[in-house]
Image 1: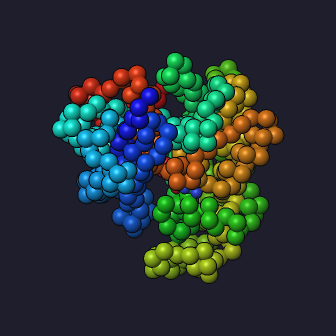
Image 2: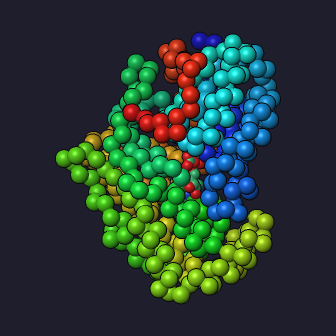
Image 3: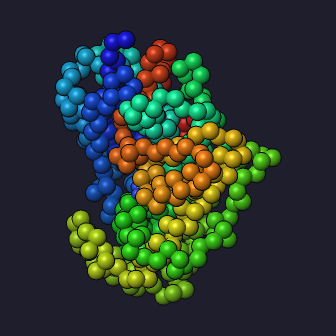
Length: 375
Ligand code: KG4
Ligand code: ZN
């Protein structure tokens, strides 16, 4: 079969991304323009600013993706764009641009669900390692700033089907990382900072037990395996208040805000031992909960393979926890590389490839859907 080049475009949250993937397998280019600097002063993503930044970045990002792939617009076989879920205004920038480009180039356009993209980030990289034979069903944990969702995924006749069997009832895991990091004055986005600092603290210093993460693991009757992370965020807040940490955390926050890219030594110098212990204990509780509930779901639905993907899947302790526990149960577990764990467009182009082969093209009238569901 001749090579098929798909140009993927992603703008669902705070990264403007474009990538060219050849035949669903070879990443020819993968350009991500992050808006961290824009949102950092607010400690979270500001939707209006996100749309404005996407508008600024989309044309140069797409141009760079094509230039890095050594291709001209006309050599692309199809375009793929994230339709949802995500921020409405942010999605609209990608969708409108992709529609206009597809129309002017007279190329087909494929609409991709962002969550399906995260799942295909794993498949893309496994194909690169010549691992083409996944055992089904695959249980995929998509764990990011907006989602903590479990899907049973299967491939039949080249097409993929997904069934949602669990999700967070309140905050997503990444959201909890971001909120706790903000509370501890560590900056935005919080996940990567807590991940980096965790080895400096004692994960046993503060006991966040199942009391703080309320839901019970797997209820077979309802076939639902849910998560809940607003409780642990409140528990961290309560700990901060009862231990009189507010004042010192504010001093810490100001000191870190003055350093443009704090190094590990900077954090170590500025942060108290109590802050580092609290961060490490929070991360340990999150990891234990994500791993134990996902494995309970895997047992409950006889999953043959486990995928862990999405921004939080970049977390080192989470990867180690899954690797250890899943291997104990004889369950193969796969993650994307850290670069493809967080938002990118290579995963969107990869997810579009089977749709391209099946001629599943988007209706010209389709629009961005902020709450698009998968499965
Ligand atoms: O998938 P993603 O880039 O965007 C969404 O679709 O939400 O995920 C971003 C989330 C943020 O909440 C960020 O704090 C979290 O992923 N994250 C991490 C790590 N890297 C990113 N959380 C924990 N540890 C990390 N290393
Ligand atoms: Zn994402």
